[in-house]
Length: 516
Ligand code: F6P
Image (cartoon, rainbow, N blue to C red; front, side, top):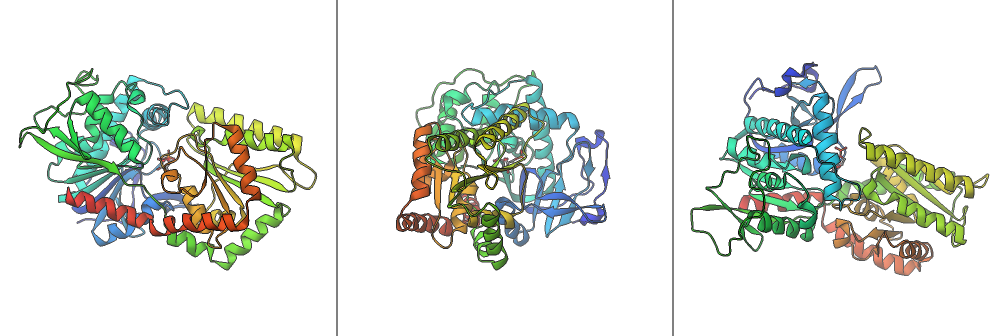
């Protein structure tokens, strides 16, 4: 099995090479396929570039499994018009998939984040439907499927991640019927009425049904998917088991470029004849965080000292409210700021006593709706601070940056109240990280009921972020909560997060996949 190290990774700028042909055949028993590779490019002090393992929970959870089962990770390395050879880094075998500049525009910014993302998040922003975006999505999905097919050993397990790659399971099954395929959708799956808007809905359903196990964050997501399959394809479903007919043409797309099998299919009412189907299972596996790592950092004296320093730098207010989000319209940042502004206007909160720290990490800056959101948020912050700041204190400390996990944990320790006001969120791992970090048992989590996390974190102050009065009332309750009541709630939240970490999530999914 040929392997290279990161230093050997060769790059070229040819878009022609984007069709991707690996120079050598490998055979990995466990293959993860995700839009992004498990490493980020970083600049070294001497001006050269190198790689760093991504800090996210998914990589943390899967790295040990990859090490023990000879695994490989297939994904895009984040730069357009650049082809890299496979390389090893941080104990991971990495297989970069190239994307041209045009494909980044049409597949990533376009179909993934201009069509699917808003559609799957309750159409908070308007989804755009463009046929050439879908064509790019199909073409890029095929490239990922081919890359996975080349590196998977006979009978390997291949785990495909997220909405960017929904056609990969079926494409991969066609190329490699011997492999076991799992798929996990990290974002919500929309209700059938919304999903029905998608001009390529049949292609997407058939693409996903190429997997043996299709995982979702919430029970409601799995139910939405099952209903879409029943309504559109008519397949028989019993106890999360979907009976996928074998004789149908499952090609994810038609030669004419349209959506195969338009309209609704007659519903199959009984178990099909033995041998005429295969079974795909669709159920919820709520993802979690690397709890041990967060707890370890929360116990680190340097990070505890940094938390105290943050409080002091903010002028030691009685209540620090904290929001930590990618700058995304799904996160309800505007709703949170509206509630906070009204509380300052009403006099229920006073600058000096209260401060809102809002971390908004840059995200998808090539997409117009994200640019508009940034303008709107920054205008709002300027207005609120202009009106309520004093010489010594600020109303909102707004930071448009990404921070390392150490700084995030210091912020969690510094914050009295964590505000998670997403209008729709597959899970929201920030909520779980805050809980994991609050080892002293105090602190209050205000949590939108429209997050996946709300299914598990029942002792948070659950809110409907559209109801500004309710949000305001919860923020005041959180600021004035009886410490014993706060501790009782936090104890229960911590029990949940400590016993359900991301490692357990991955093990449960893979165990179920093995049983399929
Ligand atoms: O929540 C879905 C997700 O794809 C995450 O996996 C990822 O961390 C986030 O959105 C940002 O994704 P990207 O920067 O790749 O668009």
